[in-house]
Image (cartoon, rainbow, N blue to C red; front, side, top):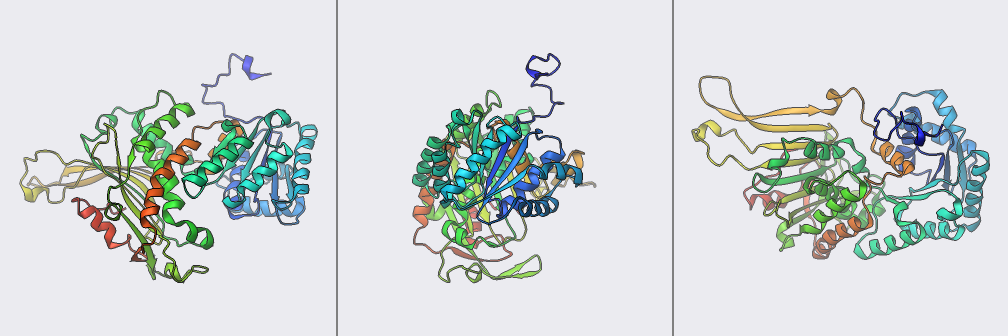
Length: 508
């Protein structure tokens, strides 16, 4: 029975999972790292949770001259290694029977014609009424080539296909404002703008979505979420790893373009935005965009920002080479592996509150967190010696790896004297809920297939983020990054940037 006419079934009923219509997921670059480590395991986990429709097909497109059997064995290894839900052979067998592989290069017209024919065949054979999502798990330089092929064959055309056609584009979306605008224009011409999903996997993380719940579902935090009570905000994304196998991409982009432009500015927007009128995707995006437009970069970028590059050192007890010793990195590279910047937000809520944002590789440990540091109490009726151990009240949202929220405040130490020091109340997702958080890609792939755009930045957000990054990159051009040893929390100049304003980085 069609559930539209079923009075016992409503969209508001949370007991009923969102299940997509019968559709195909076409993955370009299906043999690459992202596909093997994230996408294929996410598809298996969705199938295991019963969230995929019976008529669901995965079409893999890549250069290798493989058959369906070779592709299935690669997918099997990838799914088994990366799955977050229990492994069930019967689920895999059902899913694997719906896997197909189309070999070809991106400039191969015949291969794309074959892909179009394969999608048409699915309409008859699998009962898929023209619905397909195209996932670009490919280098950004290949985007225009693949988009033009999809336009040439009519595969991007909703009317011609008789269903919906959507495209998922990975970051980085462009490498500056001008390239982002050009790419946005191209993708919006080939696909309908509402069918374009620009993916930022940070927005798929439960803890990031919890920022909205924390702020807008509670009356406890919102009254103090402003410049009257907040001293400063620190957003940190620290990685203990180096650049791995991404030398060519990383040396051409650097830390700011790689993650500051997307992940960290999106986190900043969620923390600083006003309450949307609803959680409809247009309302949420509108409030995020207002924040991005209100961002003020430092007047003197040389004093309000720091670039760094890691030297040889020790991380977690193991020797780490310096950036310039990494494989395929030029010996004279001035690419930054660390970036910190002081941003402001020019609106009434956040006037004069600095937002310190930093990202770095080869740091002591992996952590992504948002710390709201509150102003100290205006009058302390205590002896100064009694409050030496008392710092700023803090609300810390830990995005990874120990997902949760920490509230740090002052409390009396047991004893006969009035000594006050900081204590922490710690909420951890893993302990509070029996349900494990779905992997970010699992949530985002499902959102694409059901057509929910809430967690996907739109073209205006992407372009506005580049408006923040481009002036920084222009000011940094021709300068050398500050050195820091692998295993340190960035260059000394980064600590000095905060110390000039009487503040210090929170030790994550």
